[in-house]
Amino acid sequence: MQESLQNINVQRLRSFSAKDMPVDVLRLDRIHPVVSGNKWFKLQFYLQDAIAQQKNTIATFGGAWSNHIVAAAFAAKASGLQSIGFIRGDQQVARAETLQQAAAYGMKLSFVDRETYRDKASVINAHPDPGIYWIMEGGYGELGSKGAAGILSSADTSSYTHILCAVGTGTMLSGLVRAALPGQNIMGISVLKNNSGIEAAIRSLLGSGQRHQPFSINHDYHFGGYARHPAELIRFMIGLWETEQLPTDIVYTSKLLFAARDMLLKNHFPMRARILLVHSGGLQGNHSLPPGTLPFL
Ligand SMILES: *Cc1c(COP(=O)(O)O)cnc(C)c1O
Image (cartoon, rainbow, N blue to C red):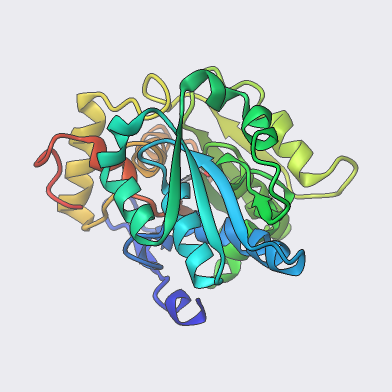
């Protein structure tokens, strides 16, 4: 873990930056070729807690292209724990590259239909094994938030005035808010459509009554909803690769980068802002594209 963290670094985006407004990317995607950056941070305290509680297995949830599933499989193995992934869909999805990687890390895969998947409590109740430590989908929860707070100390981030990240469950963003210094603005780009409950979900992760730096969520860049990827977004991803050699994924980081560029073009940021974009890793979603769609991966 310590060793891999040294690979994290900050990249200046020349095509986004202006003379007095640098735009940098925190490359959490460089932590590990398979394990998604932010999931790795979010999982740390869950694994410690599982071990402290003398559990022998972690169990969690995800879809066929889930960065969280692969990261959980890898992290469990690295911590000497067994893992079970409850996967939305049937055996058909077992061929997905992502799930094969998870299985290669020793994760036992259990397929559940969509209806059952929505009712997580029913899955948990059907497996009353006291050795199992349950982790919510995407690592959502207070320990995930505390783990994600470590993201900002993985490089020197103290001079940035605006820190932007993609938002799914909001766990990562809540961690950035925890770790933010006075004067730093944390801005989230929601990748889900009709995600109006997200602000409240984040406030609940932060704990009511706790003092924290302010945050905001932008809902304008979901591109039609979760994992939707119109041609305009794919073209943007290819362009970003060609100009900056920055790989992004269709679910999260492409939407973050697109939003940042669009806001820069619209002069959204104050003069002399110093902007940091958190590349949260996780390119698994790109495996769902037809081969050859992207020049990287
Ligand atoms: C899961 C994930 C996110 C979203 O993180 P949340 O904590 O759920 O908001 C963002 N980026 C990548 C690459 C992810 O895998």
